[in-house]
Image (cartoon, rainbow, N blue to C red; front, side):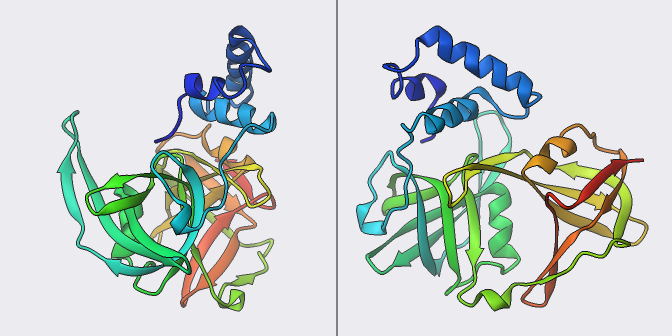
Length: 256
């Protein structure tokens, strides 16, 4: 499971005092406008000090307690099920099977990630990359979980399948923000941190789902549900005949 700031401190206690560690966390909380929680900031500090042990693993190397990145192919999909949390809310989970050249294990997707299966973005034979997945013992053996700090990416065997259109200077979306999902932090392939969130914008024609990346995430967190906005220089990606809308460093977000 994801390590707390106190657990992470144990990996660098020979480099910083507990008070220095706490003060650094408070400082960065202000820098990120409280966008990130204390545990995520602690992980960033540990990573910068070279003590982060999250790596890419083959399935036969997995063991309970690991937090790591895994590549594989989906080979089995079970039915989605609902469950009740202790706070009274209802959650969703779907159990899959993932295989690489070294082995097979379970994969659990929770809540909003379940939509990837329902929308058939993930099917049998789909190649995926699990970033910051945490490993635990499931009912049927080892299981990779994509939790709050994890991210699942759908991989294309032929990168030409994912075509980009050059964003047009006149390409704009105007509308009202109707949903802002929680921000997720993840490790990029180069070891640096990245941030991603999704929003839904109601336009005069329909509802658009847009993925927001890195520095632009901070701009989105300053908005509230119901705010009128305009998005420019949208990165349009086509995959399996469907358009995906992204705002990266070249995009612009304006509150109207």
